[in-house]
Length: 413
Image (tube, rainbow, N blue to C red; front, side, top):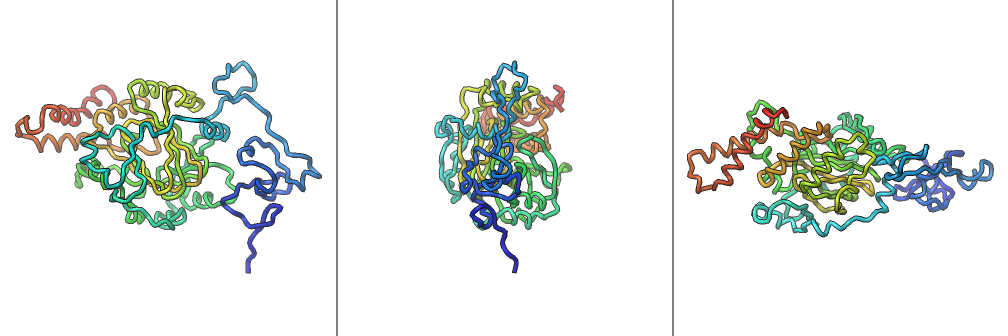
């Protein structure tokens, strides 16, 4: 019978809930609580020696201190800017305070999240649903976990993986990432945020909220016999390890997005899409060193919203947001464009085109989606009197229909 490996001075098996540190001399692993090392202190340790190895190899040594101040004058020769996503950045981010999202996030029950509510009140602020009951949304059982994602999607499927510390992208087989996820010795912080699974077996056990299906242009207006394939943006699986970070961004196509946390927790940093903030965002994003500048420092207010296990968050079009994962997390999400945010969607898309943003979660054929929606409404109202739907709808429909042509004529195509 195989024996279970034991570690540390306590000689107990590995426990995923406890922080551990590796001794650079004996290569054994130790619980921080057993050897007096706090998890937050670990990034500052250069060489660690356990209590036994200290006797022969000397005490642990710390990394040389350097200036990590983003606003440093740069006169010191060893000044190094903080990279967004690095261990130092995450540690600093965790210690900062932000205005509470209570000021901007609307809290509703699942049954209140209806088309009538949104048409009456608008969809301009994030909406938090405490429990999924009433949302008309299907989610896996609470026992579902990352290994099940591999079983449903397939171990050999290639997934895009973000190295959070370096903010770089690569690909690996899903099985390789799952092995990393369950590893007791993670050397990196890797993040999967764009595993679109609508063509896999997992699509049968996950369904987006009913309000999303009612609003979505792609779901309602994209012809089944269209030459271009229907954009696959409705079902994403997010597998994020502790300290994963996605920097500030606007969803592609100005899409709205829903998130549901099945396990773990996520922290959203939310910035209103005012004209001033959008201009600041475009200037920040076009800067060659934007990865060394925390965008929230450049705006008046950035709100912090914690999304806990079992909760669902809807983020409207244009909102600038960043995401921190404080604990290992499994979540689901989807993007949707709709008729309640036409102007903001178009403005966000124009910003995206000017920036030539290469996103892990693109909205393919966005302009075509606009054309299909405009075509549908023009045909529907053809011959009707203007008083039936009003001059405003005429203007909106014409804008949706003609906008892709205007974009191309202005050099955006």
